Length: 163
Image (cartoon, rainbow, N blue to C red; front, top):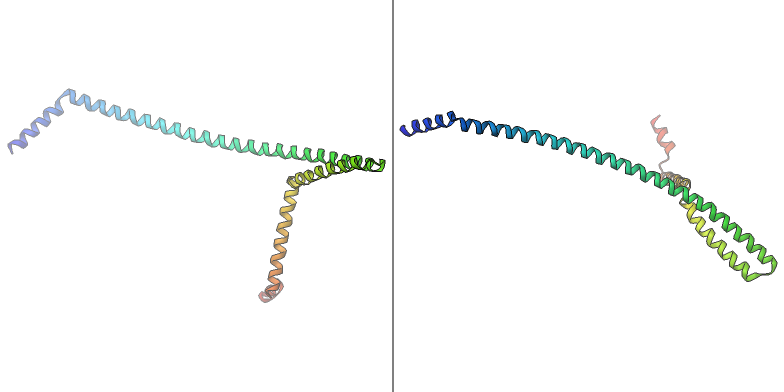
C-alpha cells in the first residue's frame, strides 16, 4: 500500500510540473495542426479529383469534335474520289473512241481503283452506318416474327386468347 501512495504522489508531482503541462499543451496543438493539415489535404484531393473529372469530360468533347472533323474530311475525300473516278472513266471512254486502247485501259483501271476507295469511304459515312444499323435491326425483327410464325405461335392468336 505504501508503494501505491508513493506512485500517487509521483503522479501528482508529474501532473503539477509546468514542463509536463506545457508538453501536453504542445502535443494537443500539434494534433490540432495535424488535423487541420489533413483537412486541407483532403480538400486539395477533392479539388484535384474534380479537376481530373472536368479534364476527362473536356477530352471526351474534344474527341467527339475530332471525330466529327474526321468524318467531314472523309465526306470531302469521297466527293473528290467520285470526281476523279468519273473523270478517269470519261477520259478512258474518250481514249477508247480515239483508238488508244492501252491508254483507255490504264485510265479505266485508275477509275476502278478510285471507285473501290470511294465505296470504302461511303460505307464509313455516318449516315450510311445509321442506315445499315436500321436495316440490320429491321431484318432481325423480321426474322424474329418469322420464327414466331414457324413455331405456330402467331401474335394475333395470342391477342385473341386474351379477349
